[in-house]
Image (tube, helix red, strand yellow):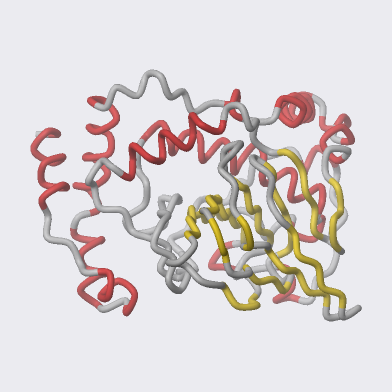
Amino acid sequence: MSTDLLEKARTVIRPTRAEMLQRTPSVNRFWNENEDVFEHAWAQWEENGGLADLGLDRSLYAPELRRAVEQAWQDPEQEIAVRALWTEVFPNVYEAQFFDPDKLSILREFLHRAGQADIPLRPPYGLVLNRGGAMLDPRSEGYLAAPSFQAFYKDLMDHFMRPIARLLCPDVYGYDSQTFGFSIQWEAGKDTTLQAHTDASSVTLNINLNLRGEDFSGSAVRFMDPATNSVKDLTFAPGTALIHHGRAMHASKPITQGERHNFVLWLYGQNGQTPYQHGRSDNTVSAQERWSLPRVQPDNFAPF
């Protein structure tokens, strides 16, 4: 049965890219009608794919960050060690080494093999012209449903991103129960620029997945602060991450050479609620509350 579903997933007639970009009703039907087929196909692909050499686990994180986060989960009063790893590089924009550059090849190889699996993946067509990438969260149509990836993704969101976001952006607490994520691949000559915008998130984590020696030029993320009229272009080193409020105005400058690979991950409240929709600017909570899991169940809201 499972093998038949894998073959069915690989041979199903797919929407054209133009239809997906236009978000025609038939595209929505395609993903909904085949949801179970694709989820079973990803499980079968993983079972048969010889992926034992690609362990997606916490060894992929930068060692200092992993140790500090695990310590904080054991004793939230030790969260100062996590905070010390993040540098404010622009007002309310923070940067840190997130993944270990020496281990990123494992994650990238997994994503490459998943891209070659010939199981339909929905690209992040909320981003104009982006040809690479995939939806990562189960709330999204055509998401990357490989079980080992989903376990890795859930651990990243629950045990790393959410408490770090609460620590650096205190007002997001209570508006951070829901997760959303996608990968992107900007390629010179194909993908151009992403105009100035804000995100439909309470907080955004942007993680670079480029390998050492996999250089690119251009493609800086430009942040703009309306309060001070200041502007700053920030570039990524392999495995580094930027975290910021979704309301922060930012843009991606054109990539001029090479490729840039990233995860873009969002947190928000139920039905897409964010703190700034309610005029909230701060929320004082305890360390124990920051290092806890939300009790709210996942909803079905997807920003795009």
